[in-house]
Length: 167
Image (cartoon, rainbow, N blue to C red):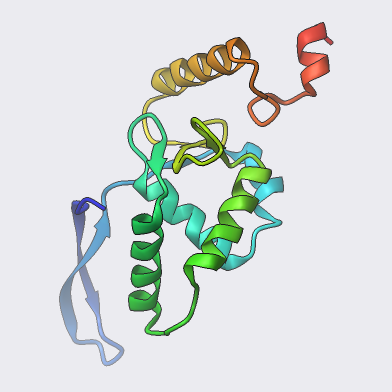
């Protein structure tokens, strides 16, 4: 993963004894918009699966594409072990289960063949960019998937039958 830039917030506050102190707190400047039409999907995720999903979102590019290969998974295991100071919090095989669940509920869409490691983080739910860019991406994805005969059920708010029949 690329190194993120940080913003720094200067705090002027007091200790419990009243002594004034100045501190700096760093926050990552990169972020992603989470749209509220996915809460029903998130409730079924375990905290570990949700954490992996957030890590995936951090790794996506401006078109919501992310390569989730063996190296990506190994990096996550290393990262989560480091930040929790716990060994065995997750394994690559547990990440494969989470990945399958994220695909099944439509938070991730596979790009390419079933053996591909290239995924689209569903921009219906999460996007890292402007509203016009999200709208263009959603339009492109819908048209492309329809033209290729691929499912759009995780991109629309109705059944595919209702969508195509205009109901």
